[in-house]
Image 1 (spheres, rainbow, N blue to C red):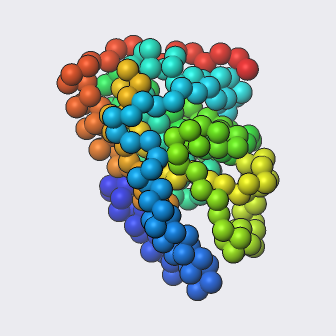
Image 2 (image 1 turned 120 degrees about the vertical axis):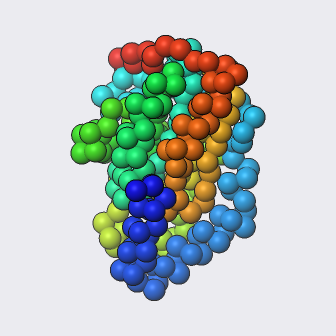
Length: 230
């Protein structure tokens, strides 16, 4: 089943269960993000991705620059392991990992969630690619992806025991847009999926197609380097 269909089914089931107040709050947030065109002002195709260094689930540092030395890099920003849409997307990326690696690329997933969250998500979903912690959304901000939840949604999230302040170790209640980038070895964005609606994610087949297109002009070789200890 395509990831898009799985996400749609999950979203429809969630909408049925969700209270009218919660649905109104989510709809208002999406309307505002569309109004300010956050998906259009963040990092776009043709622009250069900012370098970064972030810890993985074991505390080892992974850098974009080092990964790019070995080949293209797929970067997926996700909200956290608490998000069921993120879990579906991460599972789908794991399924696509052999194809991604066969094209000489590596895969990095980034969220603001602190450990033990990423470690638990990695183990639960049996993921074989790094889950990096972007504390305070520093890297997501460099990509232009961050937004703050409005107060009414903060209250609703707390009511269902999703305390992002505690999960992310910050008082900002800030999240990144779910976004996926394919970065060429020169550091430029070759493909981007950016959507303000958190129930939509990049289709793995589109990521693989973007890598094939990229490799048609700049074949990538090598494997992702070992991360260094923090």
